[in-house]
Image (cartoon, rainbow, N blue to C red; front, side, top):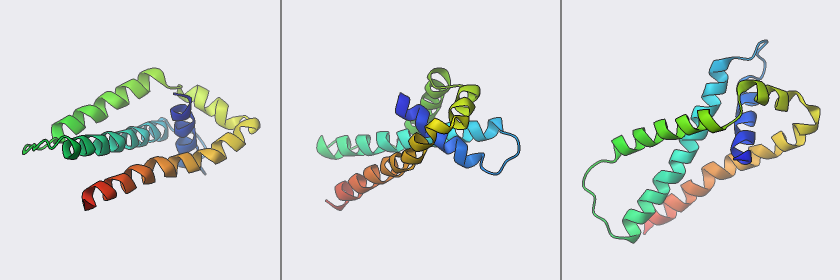
Length: 123
């Protein structure tokens, strides 16, 4: 959960860069972004299970994905830091190194499932 909080902090810092006043919408955009990253991991996992278990689902799983995004966003709102905690973490100069490292985590969380999906899809 700490990594998710740090990732939200990094995305919020990137969204709020250059703004005079922090915006609550930027904070929610960062949570939505993390929700979509987690959904990407679920999508790749479900696709892998469909291929591995040879389940022939003819129906679309769009409603499942929409429901998952809503559930993930709900749990992120409930169990992650508030906007005040995020701003305190960002404004503390000792945490700059952690925030700079989180860009690598961000790209890894996007690239790894994409590569796995491409490898599974090519089979």
